[in-house]
Length: 154
Image (cartoon, rainbow, N blue to C red):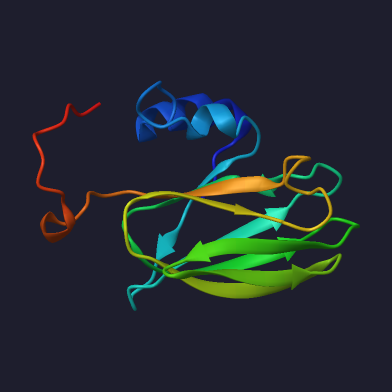
């Protein structure tokens, strides 16, 4: 499920991605839609991200996961130019070649909550705006928390 441009501001606010000292994703990625991964009966999450023709943006440019885990992403290149997908995964990144008018599926694992950047790192795609973010919601497990004083929460 993705949001339309008019719904973007409301969705960013509801997700807490629009305010200073909370998450600046909404300010850094000013274009593109917000999408939510769908969780299957097998516990794996799935999403489709496409490159919009002649715009050099991912659609959605922000993908929200309800929690950490396994994610299967179908990338679709609807553009007339060749691009790629560089996506983080636990311990390493995954890379996929996306010739014009092609598609492919990549499986990644993102266990911890946080913000993960993905891009097309060929040519000057990143510099021209072909970057996006995967937002993994949730909190750090108790066993992984640092032993330090309580911090203010946004």
